[in-house]
Length: 502
Image (cartoon, rainbow, N blue to C red; front, side, top):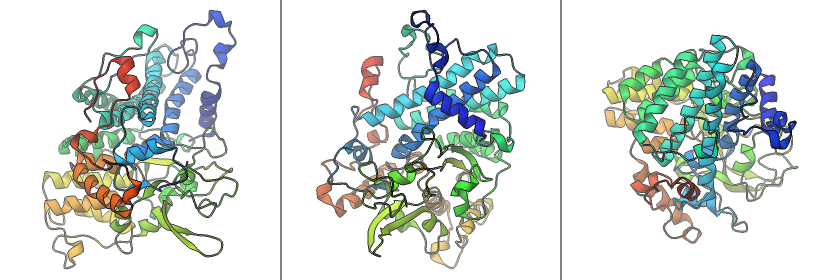
């Protein structure tokens, strides 16, 4: 993504209302959404508004996305920090004990709707700006994709949510029409993604790498259909994702010098040299007792903000012998300067060094081509198992990159023998789990495949058995009701929303 785009993101984050602040305070027009009606005059203004919509992903990518998409699954948990007990709200999410008063649910909800409001701002003002039809179409496509992305996350986590599709211009507009049905939210997502896929370009010049493309829209559309078990429609969308390829090695995918590479379909952009745009995943995911031995940054202390999204024993055991992805993705502990090893699993995937103390340059992957290949294989299998057919070729393409042998139907090695539709489902689940570990897919995969309750209850019992005194009563008691998060109580009160059952 070009440097000027980062500069615009900085301006949006630090001085978004500078223009209006020059006016007499009492004579300012009401501001809504991102920038207010006074702002939207030129093509540059509109482009800044689009960048503001992208920027809404930055904070969520740094925390909410992995908290609810990965740490809520069997892939990761947390390192219990006995001296620091000020982060129980994070632990409650992992333990399925988060209720409507948990502030992290409010953060996820509010930040998502801020992102949606920024998209609505662009859509409300784009037609008044003198600019080419092509530029307008691209801007509309970008924010419609982003709006669909936010709603797709919201509906999968909360169920039916309010559909806010217009700019809030007066206090009277602030109240929603209540929770829309899941079907209505899905219909809006579908409309936005279809329009985005038509309006977005297939690629950009190097200067604009990082923006969403038609391939990005079709990839999310494929996952959208897959979530609803509409396999034919999913397959049609996923086959339109072209122009991408697997990187030669798994490590290449996450190398910060190879951002927005051939495999990247969509990733959240971070700039380590600016504190407002930097990422800090390696600090959050490092064991809190690892000092600088994991981060190699003696200038940044680790405390209660570290030791999160910790790889579980379940995940570690999932890797096959020789899987090249394991060493890239995680470590099972760290060694201090005296050569003493401490067992404390942590994520290595985003451990790429720092630019300034506490600031890293690492992007966060949202959609990769490897995921598209596995989803196409899943769709083909669900439409009918074909021994050693196309689905096997796609599955094994991903496995070969991980330096693993092919799985085939009739293989003489039992662990590599996949001879039925059910067995292929298990093979796809396994590959998804380790290929996309720590990329915020696991929870959504468990829910859409209908295995979340069974998997998470079994996983929870194994977690509790390791340290029973550490967990409060009711931890990891997962029911179908708990597959949805509680609506934040503040939203229930202010907007008179119906609550999800516990």
